[in-house]
Image 1 (cartoon, rainbow, N blue to C red):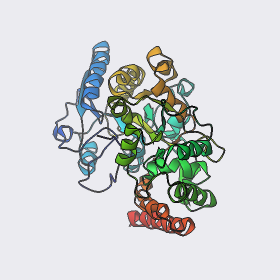
Image 2 (cartoon, rainbow, N blue to C red):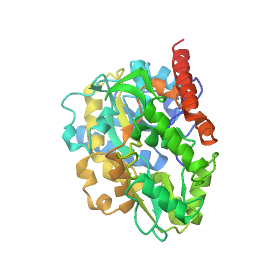
Image 3 (spheres, rainbow, N blue to C red):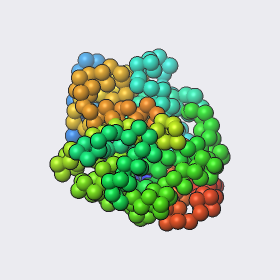
Image 4 (cartoon, helix red, strand yellow):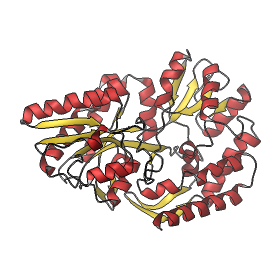
Length: 407
């Protein structure tokens, strides 16, 4: 199954709170009674990752003479919110995609990260901390990161393209399906919009202004036109392109270039494709500004054991990187982990790491949920409608959605 980064509408009661690798289901965490003498950790990672997380947490517990319970949680948001505001809630949440944090912050559930918690110079870049910050203050701890990059067929690509224009030229010379990706998903299209000068919300890093929407400015419109040309002029993919179509085209060799994420690697290996992963070549003369997702952890503001919870969080942040990479392919954010041979010698991982250097964290405010649906209008642009007119419709729909969410 293809794994998604984006999390859909946590604010609607009954909708499951998902991270990229979490599914819906009845939560054992919400119904569990909490022992006040133990530190409770809820996690949204995969089952095998939660098992390894528990092993690491128990190491800390043994060293410090404490009790720790680690629980995999898939609870609906409203159930989580109720539990988190009661004695049944977690002290610590580990492994949730950062763009959910805005919802928790507005609900008053996040404790500010202590000033002396970490040396930010030890992290891969400042963007991972921007992803978990509001008004210049960190309310979460970055644990791992992910983005998408360029896959290319090593048997059919003589030279890795140096620009996006070069990529298109090579793809057209190869055939009508030479370059494919899920253009109708804004998660991927954002790389082009942002590289051309468009943006979702304005404001400084860690201080997002949701009333400043840049999805219909000149840069965004130029990006929409570029994407439209890939379909209408260059004939590289159909207007109704899907992830499955693009993925299949790369597997069969019809496409020699494909934009995707780490979740695509195993499928391409199984299909016997001889491929490489590199950063997306410059778009509009600038390094491609793909979306970045950061898996994060936070300590609940309702926890009565704040000091112990932060001590455990620090231990987990410093000791889970390598072990979760081995079993879950999660790319660590600490430089010391990234410099280990297992990661340095993995060409696929290195391709994604290179891309994170210019990646932009998905906005971590609840208003981001008002963006995904309007951006489905990309299909209209790809089908040949005027990009400027559709851009205005997109911007209006985003503004209307934000306003509706406040009523």
